Image (cartoon, rainbow, N blue to C red; front, side, top):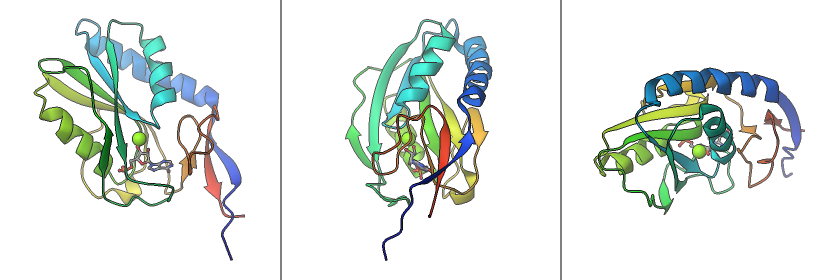
Amino acid sequence: MERCLSKLNTLITSEQIETKIAELAARIREDYHDRNPVLVGVLKGSFVFLADIVRVLDIPLGIDFIGVSSYRGRMESSGEIELIQALRTPIAGRDVLVIEDIVDTGLSLNYVLNVLRQKTPASVKVCALLDKPSKRKITVPIDYSGFTVPDKFVVGYGLDFDEQYRYLSHICYLEEK
Ligand code: IMP
Ligand code: MG
């Protein structure tokens, strides 16, 4: 019988996200206010987080996106990372801050960091809203981390399951009904 995964349970409210973004933005602003960094959002999941944090940051910065894929509709990482959209902004000599929705195995972020480092930026740091350390396969640096989440599949606030639920303003976990 096919599993039904449509029961949504709130894990992080939109108020908690807003408070966390203010905290993260204060730290990032302090570190980057005079550096005109390039924020690189990892598509697609980071689009909501990036849109919210840049408006709270309110400092001069550039924005670009990089697209990677490893899930393809499943809940477990395939382990094979594909570059599906390249960065267009030249980042040599620039300070880069990668904006991620969630770090799970760490494989996608590790791949993104390698791609970016080859372009000789002045620095590369990482800001991830969610950290799911239980399935980590490779150590990756997270310089600005929002929430640590348990070993559950989470959706909302940009994160999807099979392209569903990205529009939710809070973060839920999916449960079998
Ligand atoms: P990783 O390569 O396993 O660290 O996973 C990287 C990407 O997979 C994240 O940036 C997300 O886009 C997606 N992902 C990982 N865990 C979840 C989850 O619980 N819900 C939704 N997407 C996830
Ligand atoms: Mg992501």
